[in-house]
Image 1 (tube, rainbow, N blue to C red):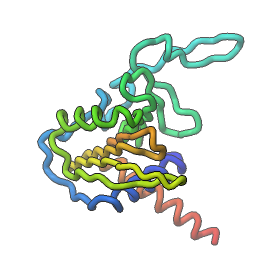
Image 2: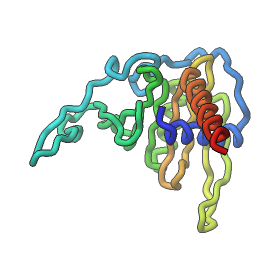
Image 3: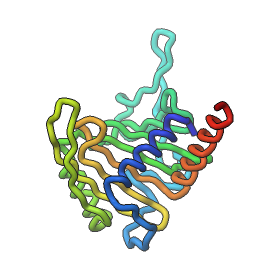
Length: 198
């Protein structure tokens, strides 16, 4: 797993858990085995097709705009990660695999769609196990309400944040216990490597 990806996931998870309570795994009747139609624990190709490639002027690129339906392409600079295109509500989606299987799906949406996304998640997965609104502040001192929701089952956790790293975008993170375990293991290896240098 790419160090930047793992570190981002660990920081995001730590920050989210710091502002909510740490949830223990629990029985969750609506716990999904997929998210956005993409199955956890399976190769990405089992759920989506790779975007077609086109060559123009000697350059080969993925032609996701011309394809017109959801497809994926390897993410540039992120090992084991794939960008997903043509998802109507979400403008940026990345899939992370662990040992060749989908274990994490992250997606971003415009903050203007936050209420609709939260409502759709609640309708599909039931009432959130944690439902909290916190006030966040940008560098200019303006305050915003950040609505956060968390669902946690025995294998899958879904986190919703109406405001992400930018005030005009929110995000949803859906990941499995295998992803958390892998990220924790990678973080420990990185930490141990740094200790060895010091």
